[in-house]
Image (cartoon, rainbow, N blue to C red; front, side, top):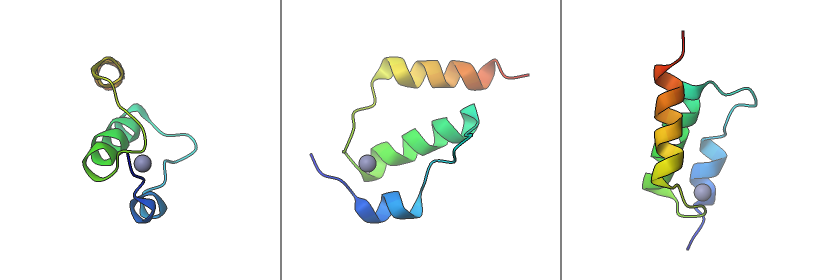
Length: 54
Ligand SMILES: [Zn+2]
């Protein structure tokens, strides 16, 4: 378990993140940092939210 501080500083989640931004952030985060686990369920939820957006 490690936190990639540099990545976090460079990639801050916007306060009012859209589902797209959230999904992007978490997929990128998963590649660069292991400070928190992203479950498949969460990922599916986010993908669904993006799809269901008007
Ligand atoms: Zn992290």
